[in-house]
Length: 476
Image (tube, rainbow, N blue to C red; front, side):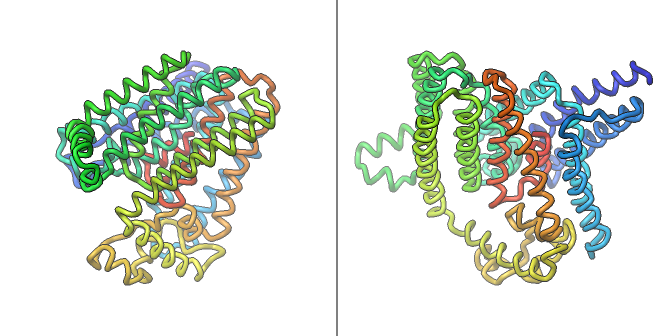
């Protein structure tokens, strides 16, 4: 074995994947029809190079490093890959269209395998997550530029008052933030009960400030008019001078953190910025996703990190999850009152998709063929919702339903098998190691919660199909 060559391959993998995740997240090019096509191009180039380099490293070493859970985790991942290949070869009537989706499946699973075998080292994993968070925070900064009306690029206001940052789409942008939000929280010290209590109070306070600011932006002028002269002042302050209002509320949040004497203020502030950006996308699915992610983080952290007794833990979780559900329901209901057609569109699309699934519920209709077959069963209500009949719907706005459509209940069961195994192994690791103060524990809890949030988000969206957020999901 050539040790120098093997070391060279390892460096490419160790530094290439963080850079790839960073570049795919922040890149866009506005002189083409699709401003984010460059993300797809970069993803294919980077992922192919990294996977091939990993294979060459294995060939050079002459072995695949195996751990305790290697076969248990790798088997469902490989079976899920084979499910896509079988679906393409034997069941897809549209090979060219199907191959496009199969290519993404190959690169996603290949990246997952690279992560499993090459990023078991904590420092490598930490470096990768830091690059992902850095990309997220740069996107958040650009999101604020869009929100405050200072976007210098030609695509400004492409989605009206919804921000989309470097991702070119509010749903894809919010999906990425839903994934990293719990990972950001994982930087907070939670193994000390006193610090945990202060962190919960601090997070609740700055979250309330963020929600308050966002809803001042959502409220219609008629709402302010009902308050008379006070409403006129508030409208002038929060809408006419929204940048000043945001800065003042942020400074109030920072002062609150200092008042509580929080040791790690930056993660809480980063979460505040991420949360406000998620809300400013006005994506209802992302509200549900981040709520699920934060609740999952609270559950995992209280069970495996924070040293609280059972009674206190259960009481805290009941109150915390109830409050989150109430606020999330209120936010979603408010946005639905403004844009009910988005829900109606999804419901009618799901009904049509179910109609197609019923033809081959076990083996599916072929990976990546939805956009070809869907027009045949599209309901006429969609035409009324969109005001035209020649629109294109590429996906059914639900990742779980689309996997079922593509590969049948067999393919979807394999996907669920993979996810459940990953969570089972992660929980076992957290249970067996009694040292709750390890940063590895917090990061693992953050990743698990982020995945929960993204899976929930994808019950109403299909951002996992797109490289900007799908790549991040398979990396995490």
